[in-house]
Length: 440
Image (cartoon, rainbow, N blue to C red):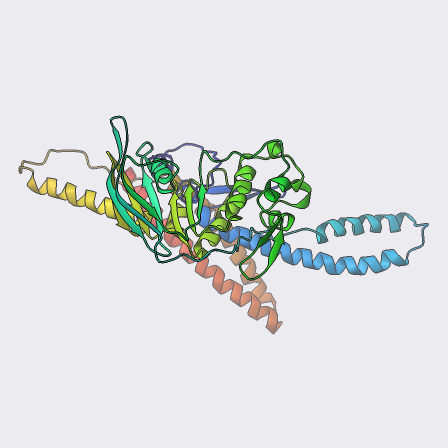
């Protein structure tokens, strides 16, 4: 359903404003991205991958500016320290500039990251075996003789339409719901960490710090390090000021992050995650992905986040309905490519076996610009005008400059500019050909 909506919106000639953490959706549908960061709104022209490049460049520039401000602040500090208490108008204006520098110098350009390097109990030889599982609700079959034996480090994603029994399967696997038939054998060393959609039941009347302390006052980490409950919360983006907030005041994403923390504090070696990215921001999702990529235990995850699945899993359980589950090697994109290839082969076979008849006279659909291509063409034309003006400026500077160092710098920029112009013009010609073919 997400893929259908994605394709529909990408081909629609509409103005669209959306909020989403679905990165494939941003890549396919959006041609501009607005980012709200530390009370500032930034606009980036392009899709998600372009946004990542431009954001990295912006932060690198801000970091340099912050470092420059720190150095200047030290000089200003020496001046301020030496001034007498009675200051004139000129001194006051400089003091105001100093205060502004202090704010800029303390800016935190680098975002804090969630560090989740937890200690994990080693898995034994026997992990989890599912034998001929049967499960149904009335006349609705969920599992129809499913079997699978998990091996160390196995990473399996679960996909399928809503209502095919994905969450029920997780309940059966973790022993929270009995199967109607078959066996679930769990190894003695297995410690499940089960992140449930319905399991988010944190005590609303407790403070954030107390919720974590109820699990453990101190937590041993992977390399012999111990963290207090407060230190652990800071690593999960809960600064000291927010640790004394009541759970009832947290946003949906903050509650899920806190729930995830309490789950990982139990040091599981078999993670079962049911839609873990719901309500999480992209930064937290990315950090969670990094943690799961380094996780040495088994992973079983249900998610509609295709980007998340592609980065983490190497096999799939595909719930097809009617209790049927297919075991597919590869990630989600591998699976969709395989499905598309099978569909293409089926259609080709149908065409080959169909009776031959005179082809109907039909109007040939001519290629035409999509809304996204039209917007791209407009942006290219505007960009080429700016580049042409800059080229003229550089040519003038090259003719009027005798400094060797400056000439070399201008020549380098001129060469890069010409390459950019050539690339833009080639793409613009492609779009103009499509437009002309549609007009004729």
